[in-house]
Amino acid sequence: MKTAILFSGGKDSCLALKYALENTDVRCLITLVSQNPESFMFHTPNILLAQRQAEAIGLPIIMHQTLGEKEKELDDLEKAILAAKKKHGIEGVVTGALASAYQASRVQRICDKLDLECFNPLWQKDQFELLEELIKNKFEVIIVGVFALGMDKLLGRKIDQKFIEDIKLLNEKYGVNPAGEGGEAESFVLNAPFFKKKIVIEESHVSGEGESKILMIDKIKLAVEGGK
Image (cartoon, rainbow, N blue to C red):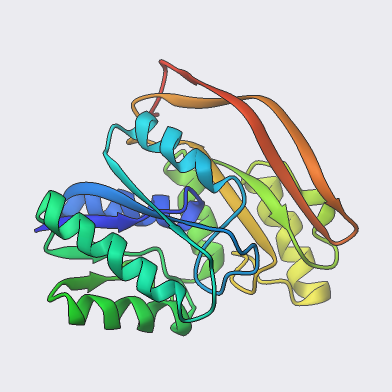
């Protein structure tokens, strides 16, 4: 089946892409660029770098702008998916939805309308198992956004065994969702087994303060040693 991936550049969409590459004919990535940092549907930190991630992976990408207004942003998502269907002949859409029924149900509704299959390979996956799977498969992932009590020390950290130990403590102490499904954190993938080139951060800065901070990536380069 020819598929497109709803792609944010974070850990969940990249892990979903791994599954899709193993089981479908992935034709393109689809990224919504929201002007609303509080979007209910779309990841926003460093979202413009999805273009460079697509280049590193070696897949075409459809990037579509949205104002990010609740529910209205779904019209923009539908337009982007329709563009992928017309340009790349896709028959299905793959998402990185993990626990958000709000997101999963709305993507499903759009796919039904456009006569496309919808796949959510990570749906209801144990979130600590997901983090372990990223490490096992040698994904290089960093935390680029933190938005909850106790999370500030994790900004810029790579997801590794020490990270899992620390997030487990925060989960026990504050109820922090280990995979950030409650909006506690956002991630960015620098490398994965299917990357043809590795992303190297050359310049960055921290925006925000207190419990809400974003690591803004200002300059990157693509290194030849992608994949693992």
